[in-house]
Length: 597
Image (tube, rainbow, N blue to C red):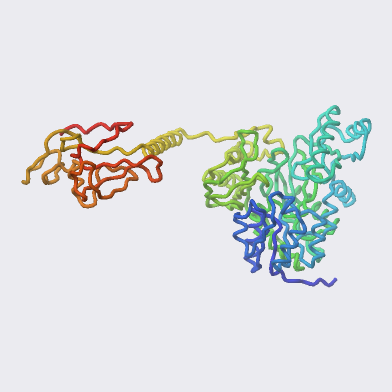
């Protein structure tokens, strides 16, 4: 079989945020130009700024922008892109989009459309896996089953069971059912959610394992019929069927179980003629029995942990396979150390993990770990897209050290302006059960990690002091100016004592060691006599020369206009201290006069 190769010169990434930046990073390292497409809310996002070229798609929602096939292809034509990388999500597992890219004469950096279609429908995939000898869980299709047929299907599968959307993903269209009485309502709810999310209301029943682990195998295949695995990742720490902590290798997997699962995963990829990077996911019970769940025909969110323990750049391998090159992995690929990844979301754990939006007032990434982020300081986090801000990944010689390093990095992360799940992630990483490897899919329900940090009393005290000082400074800044002017007939702002007229070297305590010059340095008159000085000035004041109100002051005597810049209140004018026409407004907070020496 003769396979021709091509050279990719410019890649358009049909995605956004963190994954777009991730693909750009590898493309630049390979000398390939990059193109970003973006929606209106993403116009100022980091991935747009980092691309060599960027094309606005014109719209706000996903349907108007990143899911619009014609707009994406038009952007590729306009920029001269010769390849498209779909990232993950959006159109990444859309066989129709893959076909459209190839029909347009562009290189599709992904598996063949037929493989996407075969694995995109879970029922079709399960049947293909059964034929390939890959173990699967008991299941039942529903079709338009009436109440009687539905009850029978439930009994055949056994309880507890899971209602699953055939076209689903990301936890949508899924319901756990523990008794026959719950089944009809769960099926209807799953169908409604699936129709809304995926445009299909087809669901099926599958046996549910209460105590299990979610373990997946990373695979890579090329056009030369070479299929490899890059070991496993464990993704059992989930909330509402959504992964939040992933790691490699799994603390549960033995060498024999690893060999069995990797063999099953490569068999699954061969069964559908797979090419490129993909993931075969399994559910594993307490005895180590593994069952096929699904195959993700794209790069996974959690791919960095595999890269960290194998030293393989998966995006680079994707690009090389798309160009027609054989896989470059060494035959004796080995695991090195342990890697753990957490997904940092803009969400409020104290409010049921509701997504949060707003301006990211501060964003400072920690050192010592890998941070794949989609945001920068000052960005607006929109409600229109997935709330994930970043992925943080720690790699260390041991799992315990990786967990400790990642928890520390999360604490050092500075993220202000909106709520996140950071403290919740730290609580998971430091939980004794997690550190012991007790990482089943019901971890969060069983252990209930805290959702907020326990504040250090000293940190709270310092924050309170800082807040009080800040509030006081703000009040002082808003106070009206208070002139420091002596009463009529007095020569000192602090007392009615006559000012010294001595010109000798004698010093009084009131001068604090300064030489007397005919008037106390503390008097307004003395200050007014200095070049450039002002009388009774405070913050924001300006000065100018004019005659005083009584006409007794010379044009050189200063008159200050007090008050903050831009104030609507009329300025208050102050003349010389002896001017009888001067009227000093009573301050709202008189300052106590200094006691006489």
